[in-house]
Length: 103
Image (tube, rainbow, N blue to C red; front, side, top):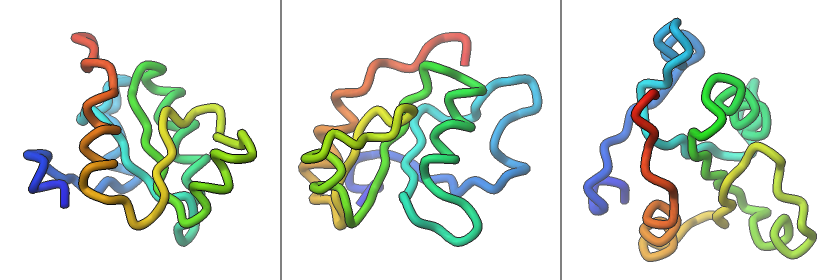
């Protein structure tokens, strides 16, 4: 799906999360809410602790409920319900601010 948008994908591990100098080696983080050993809220908070302006999209099967209840985690810029439609993902990515030069 991302390839259709011209976006490259780079799975990240804890060691690949940043370059060690407080810079994220990517323009946007797309994370799932529920994953083994880590929660998407935790990922979002960690990303924002390194770079506050880094966009974070959260994918979840609970997206509609989270949005309806106003329960969007504080470090998440946009919530998308799973599975996202290509149009929804395209719109979410297009609505994000341009990456900062100091990333």
